Length: 155
Image (cartoon, rainbow, N blue to C red; front, side):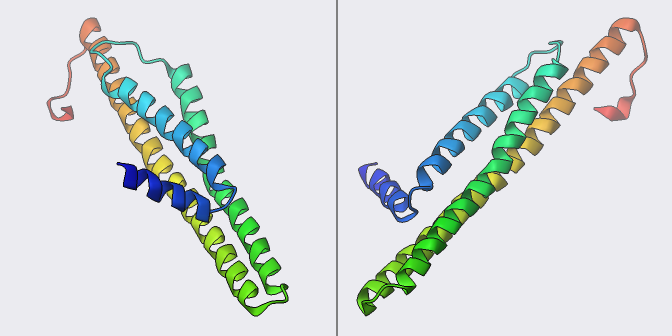
């Protein structure tokens, strides 16, 4: 466990200043995704599905998912600026070190931003499917109460 935390700390340090906001964004996004998915999956039979709440939650998830790659891109720009600073340095060993650090920072923030975005997008798709499944269950329950016959092949 300690080794894993050290590895995460090293990863964050290599990625530069943008890694902290990206990790905070990831934490908020994944916590929100977990919460809404648990709400959808464990919705009891006959529960009223709140369409307004679904829309608000979905909007929040989409914003967080869309912001992650942009924050990664911002970290990429910061890393490339560090790279150009290294190229303009006077000493050869200093130049190599700064270029390597800048490129590493650029790639790590891009990787993290895109990873957060892809996972967030997959979560949004699962959330939408779970919501549609709950809506269908609610409509079937309402139809059964009213007395409409249900199709056999819809199960």
